[in-house]
Figure (tube, rainbow, N blue to C red):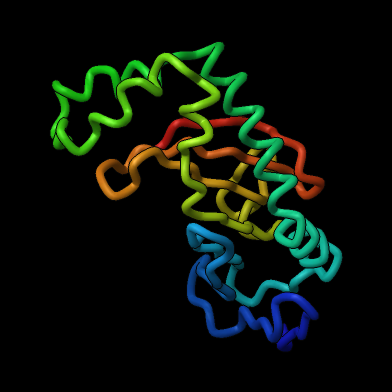
Length: 171
């Protein structure tokens, strides 16, 4: 595929890739969120898909607000993520460093407000096909609580319109 120039992402080229890999990355916002665009080798990039990604990133505060509302609903329906941190004494984490977290475990909106958006993954159509990702979730927002102390992630997965498809607990 010849290099493609996009107004938001700049010049993109997947010809040198040997496997699915990052072809663009930046940091956005405060605190800084690491954002990456992933592509498959020799992929023909879709301008409409890139435009949709750019629109979502340019409207990140709106998407973040919707994602946090969905996280509140998810945690109200499934408290296992909160329970995990309630049992922090049994984990390898430094309990003193997480003491501030304890009051938030009984206040879902406060807990969700304390989550940090640490990463945004933009997955092109071809990468999802290669990974056999169904349903297609080309945009993934990774939220962490106390990212300097834990590797636990609430991954909010969205379609190209910013509709939330799923929320997964990952690490």
